[in-house]
Length: 112
Image (cartoon, rainbow, N blue to C red; front, side):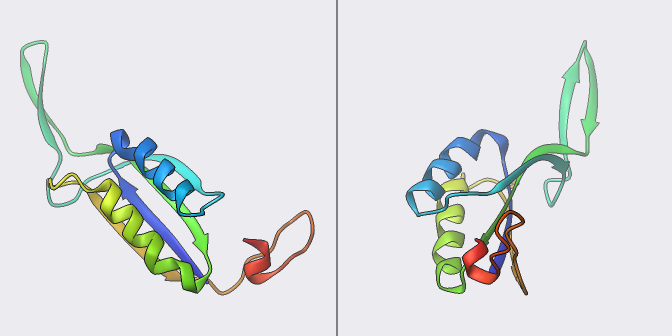
């Protein structure tokens, strides 16, 4: 199994969520986070004063998938979240040793 974490721009969330649903993903964890990468934040003007915000709002998606589905899900996220701009985000793929459904006790891919 794989555990996929994707950091995307907030305005892309609905489009990515819908594309993942069409690809067969029935559940995910979503968090509002902030951070920065190569873009090093952004410069804004507030009440006439310019300031730099180093932390930008992002959406973090966490999805557990069977091994056979991982590559296609990563590609769905990459293609859908891409805006061809710095700060589009990152996708991380981890090995997932085990999963358990709390209610039934199902284990491994059955718990996904």
